Amino acid sequence: MGFDPRAMGEEMAKRSGAETREKLLDAAEGLINRQGFAATSIDQILERVGATKGTFFYHFASKQALADALIRRFASQDRAVLASCLERSKTLTDDPVQRLDVFVGLLLEVADVLDGTPEPGCLFATYCYESGLFDAATNDVIADAIRRWRDEVGAMIREAVERQPPRAPVDPDSLADMLTVIFEGAFVLSRTVGGPTVFGDQLRHYRAYLRLLFGAGAA
Amino acid sequence: MGFDPRAMGEEMAKRSGAETREKLLDAAEGLINRQGFAATSIDQILERVGATKGTFFYHFASKQALADALIRRFASQDRAVLASCLERSKTLTDDPVQRLDVFVGLLLEVADVLDGTPEPGCLFATYCYESGLFDAATNDVIADAIRRWRDEVGAMIREAVERQPPRAPVDPDSLADMLTVIFEGAFVLSRTVGGPTVFGDQLRHYRAYLRLLFGAGAA
DNA sequence: CTAAACAAACCAACCGGTCGGTATAAGGAA
DNA sequence: TTCCTTATACCGACCGGTTGGTTTGTTTAG
Image (cartoon, rainbow over the protein chains, first blue to last red):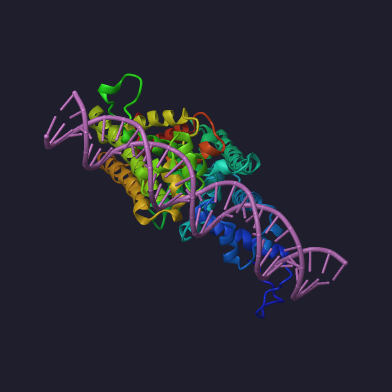
């Protein structure tokens, strides 16, 4: 968001190319969240921002390029969330089993934010249900992002399993994937039937499952 | 499906309006699964079926009407799966805790089918990520279908909880919703990173969670 | 001067939708 | 049986509007 302290008067600094680009991306993301990519026209995006066609094609070579830039930005934010929770959980505890629990606890804060968002959406899912419209490179961005969660969370789970044998046999990869599954599933649930604590409730189930598996205190 | 026993020769009965309608729905579903609704043109559907514009608008008043007919058909199939698994689980055992386990076991067969499908997709999710394109009645079909799962599975869980207090506190509704969440999440996972046993693995985690909660098999 | 944005006209392709017409089969009346 | 009517099912040319994208030129700020 970062305001520009110099230009708080009335007129925003006209000479900010990157800012206009971000505004175009923001408007596109909002519209795509409701209608999908195909139904979102360039004119609609332009109308929201208050720009003209020339401006759009100055910043993006094509609509496809917009789509690509958009998921890359989204994937970057997603990566930041993962890295932040990962790092904080490592700082807070050294025990692998506890760290896993703390990690999910930190994600619960993210879930609360999503539950407080009017129309929560995930660009990954939106794109994947229109995957036929995008080229391989664009689709790969999504796959890479999801695989990163699997790798990082999977590593944590492996450490926890090593420290404390789970109460039931566990496949670390699919158990790590389950985090993605729960988030993506919660998006669908939230957008269809709604509810004020969908993300939180589902993530708490995941945490309860982990706690039962690694049975804190009791074995 | 009901075949016409009179016209089994070679030429299909020309006078089969319902059949053409189904073919249009099938073609539309396939295309929408890959591109979404907005990007799927009527001409594309027609080309697949080998029909012309006049035929389409003879069977459907508009593209919106096609969308509506399509989810209603999908919701009807979805309802059939739920009813089938529900009824069979009731036949197989009387104990509420076991019935829940059997029910999920039957769904595992469905999961195997999905894992064997080239491009598994759920129209509910596809629509929900383009929800801005459909009217309220169309969107309601999806919400009703998902609520039905919550109600039916939620009732089973409540009976199980009553019979055998779970190892951790349980909210029946959100635990029932978790089934939908896992399926929908598995769709996204399957379509992005792929894998031959995504649905099965995730559903097995759900079953493992239930077994740990209700201590089936081992206590 | 150059980067960044505005303005407006223009284009071919495609979109959802309309419309007049046609082939076929069933049903009734002669 | 033959003829006529009627409804179903389908055809394909056509229409106005929108789409992504282009072009050419002007303006503004650093």
